[in-house]
Amino acid sequence: MYGTKTTSYTQSKTVSEMLKQKGVTLGENDTLSVPMDTPVTKGMTIELWRNGKQTAVVEEAIAFDTEKIQDADHPIGYRAVKTPGVAGKKKVTYEIDMKNGQEVGRVAIQSVVTQEPAKQVEVIGVKPSGNGLSKAKGVDMFTDSKGVVHRETYYDLPMNKVMGACGGGAYTIRADGAKVDKDGYILIAANLSRYPRCSLVETSLGLGKVYDTGGFVSTYPDGFDLATDWSNNDGN
Image (cartoon, rainbow, N blue to C red; front, side, top):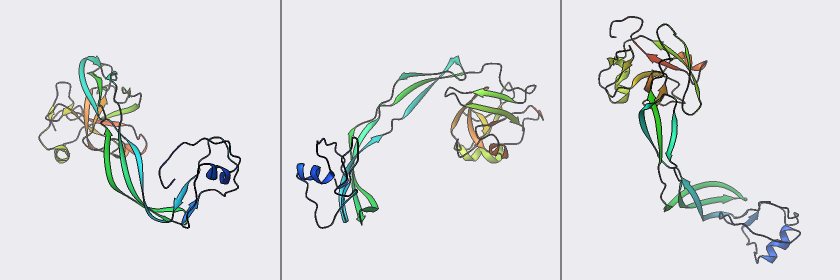
């Protein structure tokens, strides 16, 4: 009724009889979502709206944050939930504009948190398996801790132009030839629509950070291209 959802029980045969039983009288500007003589059925939804501006209070969920603890004792791909997260709750008051029984506009005018969310703590393995991508094995299929399969390849180009995307700083060459940023994350090219720039991702060589993208993503949307020094061996 007017944007507020309630559950109601009745033995009435029609919507008209149910409204009468519940003491609901439609006003001049009210619109019902179904005809008055509609038979009442189990689980049906009936909406009553008033044309013009009105307010409605809706309870909405607040997503919880996730803290990831990197554990070098577990291999890449390992994931365990240490503390489950709990979604929070908030009551949002909307000003809703109705016309001919249809919502044509909605603006949030107040939001009150009724239950704070509790963050989820996850343990993520960061120990390279030793069986992943290499210069000799230029293509690898890697499954991360969420079960997503990534086609991994590598490329060897100067990365200076993309370093400013995630805070700047120089990159260095790790002992195994992987190019890493100042925080030790492998420089990754990925599908930015799925893996936004600067997000952390799991690879067979360890944790990486997305700095770049490439044409391969049109064929392999979950694919990763890892920046290495395996081709030129010149530190660039």
